[in-house]
Image (cartoon, rainbow, N blue to C red):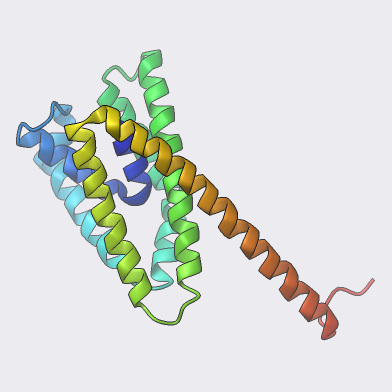
Length: 192
């Protein structure tokens, strides 16, 4: 579940699709609701939409902004469904953990994409997006094959994502404050 939670913060629809396909093919014991054909079709269509949006500079930022709410809530719902009894404390904890991990991954993704969009060429977006998609597939494969190792990997990824996000925000804050200082020197600042 840690793998699906963190992976959902990167690409919720790909995780949902992979879980459903794994359940349908009998690779994993996945709740029946995720293996339904209508769920797989919707997840597949939304994955294709995200796959395209993620490759286009600035469109990816708009997509990420909308998904700041969607990814953690979707991951929480997946966590509750995977845990089984969503009315139990275990289901609630699973939902909170999955949602928190998704928010951690999403924040790192969104801040990295904002930084990448400062570069005028589109290849960095395409490369980052493909790396994210392959990373989610790899993480889910690891979670299916060895859940204990996947939990350790997710813990390392969550720590790295938190550190990366903090670093990017600190740099952005310094740039913003520096810009404010320059504008003030040029006569555009607040007058007191």
